[in-house]
Image 1 (tube, rainbow, N blue to C red):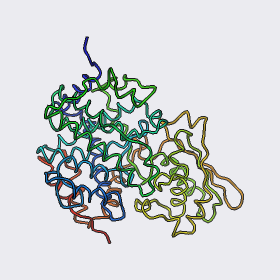
Image 2: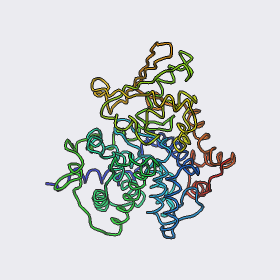
Image 3: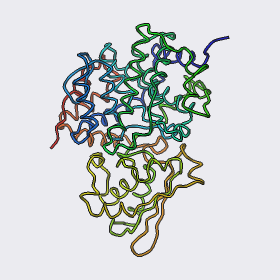
Image 4: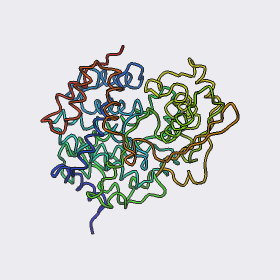
Length: 461
């Protein structure tokens, strides 16, 4: 009897993708996700983003000389510190692709992981894209095996906990590990897996993206150690003190292997964000936008805002100290200004805009224990009720936000998003060159051109 059938099958799948490449539809969608993720990474170099500045300074000071680019810093360090710094940047502005059902932000981890190792080991664009897709798929499967709703209930962040395994898988592809080495890499990733929801108590929003940096750093470390022969657990998903039961009371290892290599839901179900905030609020923002458009509402017409949301997710959005996760901040900003900019996460408009401050005091979250709770986390259903100053109430509900695969953004919208984000930190020439390099990376012989453009410091007006 095989000692670790689940872990072995996962490790074999990872190694097989390095040899065979991705199905064409998976490769195509991963290229689009990568373009979008690169835009958010570059925008994170904006001077207002304190987490990016802080982790970049740390990596520059403590990272050893190496071959991996620090985005926006015109320098290279060792791959471990590059993965940490760039992984933190990947989630800094909260506008990267995400997986609604599994409550994940895997692109923010996989691009930095794959970039660092592709540079260090002279891999090509196809290797880069393959590693990103494999990492996303493994992250998703680990989350579904642990049960993301359970992870949240226990105070763990699925992206950080599960993303460590995804980063180890992406690294294994690029390091061309064999199944035995990959098994040890997964085991070593399990030993380093962490991610507490305690980051919600850091209003600077430095600790929030640091979770993704940790996952990238730890996954890269695990794979490099395994490559060099370092020992590790060989049945991390199977028996003994396995990681699934360590993080979940209702774990089930079947999602790790069901349809593995045939279904790519960890990639194909990723959504592209139109808003710079926690994804739980995206359907509600669509509903709010629809009410504004249908009824020609101005913020001055509104006496109060109510959001109905699933009780299991309310701790993330109800009066959260983080502006990116606070319904009482995000919804008034959208209503008052007509948009939500990523820089709004780092400048508290409640302190400078009287109308945002007024509406923030009059926004509430209703913790639903019925239909919305039953739908969560498969759907982040949000219902907005606006109480108008004339006493009337208008209401709108949305279950699926724009940007989900079922309601995909157009190519033009994705390009416009990229240009807007990158344009905040780069002149037109660099923005155009970056978009071209990111869009064509799959065909590139190496990552030097893209990395060189990513390295350039931010230029803001």
